[in-house]
Amino acid sequence: MRILVTRPQPAAEKTAARLRVLGHEPLVLPLTKGISEPDAVREALLQERFTALALTSAQAVHTLALLAGDLAPYLDIPVFCVGAATANAAGLLGFRKIITGPGTGEGLAERIAVELAADPKLRILYLAGDPRSPEFEAGLHRLAVDFRVTQIYRMVPLDNAEHRLQSILTKTPPDAVLLYSSETAHRFLNLPSADDLTDLRYLCLSSAIASILPATIRNVAVAATSDEDSLLRLL
Image (cartoon, rainbow, N blue to C red; front, top):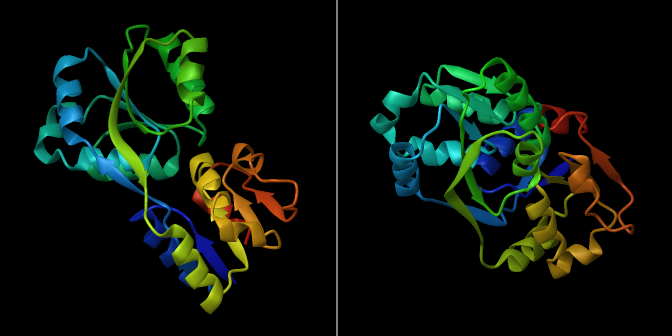
């Protein structure tokens, strides 16, 4: 199958490599790119009072990686990661106390609340991006978790997405598209050429993403759990 990959780089190329191993042909169409703000991380680590970190994206881990040796004093504090991919990336940075959530912001908030019951002194520093889903912070508020938010990266749209999509459609029309976030789904659906792609298989990382798709798209599947392994099993 020819699979349209809408993730930003470098994650898109990692997914493409996995698809090739599985015998598929990846068609990479990043719609956004991450702009890291490492100085914001440094300032937050020095000024905020916290005992644990929360990460809801691999892009946040990528920004942390830019701090290199500055991370050494923090490698033994708990790090709450939204899912396995983020947890694996944090482990590669040297963090030693990683708590992995179920792949959703709401689920991660509930996991933190459980840990908070055992350690009431937990204070969470959430290293976040813009834009981001509100469900994690809403869950923390609902569960009365003490936390602070620092924005450490921005996702900005890439130019010429419509032209790049048209080029792909002309040369190698895809059979399916992978959607990893609500923001990406909105951006993809807003491309003029996407109006003609209602017959594709739309494979979504979560039901929240699938809910964005219009009723004219009927071939939709949702991963059983919010991780890439589960998403690729839909193929």
